[in-house]
Amino acid sequence: MSAPAVGRFGDALLISRVPVLMEIKRRSADGDDLFRGRTVGQLVREYEALGAPALSVVTGSWFGGTPGLLDEVVAATGLPVLVKDFLTKERQLADVAARGASAALLTATVLPKSVLPRLIESCLEHGLTPFVEVSDEREAAAVVHGERCVVAVNNKDIRRRERGPEGPERSHALLPAVLATGTPVPVSASGIRSPEEARGLLDAGYRALLIGTGLLLADDLSGWAAELERAR
Image 1 (cartoon, rainbow, N blue to C red):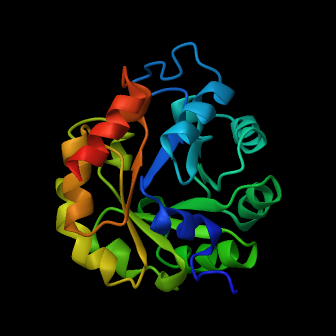
Image 2: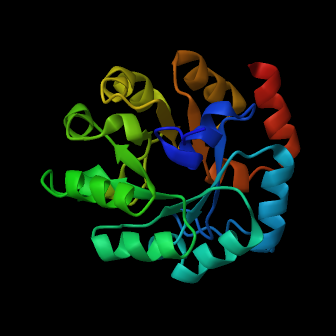
Image 3: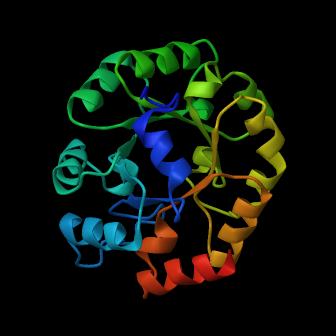
């Protein structure tokens, strides 16, 4: 059987009973410790037990990440892994692919319009699923090979280092533009504060969600996931 157009990473999101891309990052945008004494291995095991279809790992220094964090996560799991950093060069994509990533973040907001298509193509050449993050209609319109990409709306403002107001309103407003890219896996990313908000996004038409801080700060991870399933 041939591989699906969006690769192992996208397929995992499409078929999961818990369509939540669960994120590992050391600090919040405000500098709060999100590991709270847990190790990478402990977080991976907790997420796997919840039924995570794939994991996201933030290697960007804004959030306390390092390139080695990707290596730790890949070594600890057999799930597909998205690497999140400001990836702007083809050699960076080749590097994360060689180190076991299945998908790579391309942040349209920080990439010139002429560069984004080239990096999408570079991801595909290296066997990575392009995880293209957009914040408005113009950025969504610049996505090429949308049928082979995961296209996500970031509910936070990356230009303000993800500080300030957040919520799912941007995702609801941009869903038509995201669907117009042809992506089979529209994703709402970040700023999702409750299972009820998560359910509303999935009911609206998003096929998966990316949640980091909300899960990492939850006192009862299994209860959060169970509440989402009940809400659906």
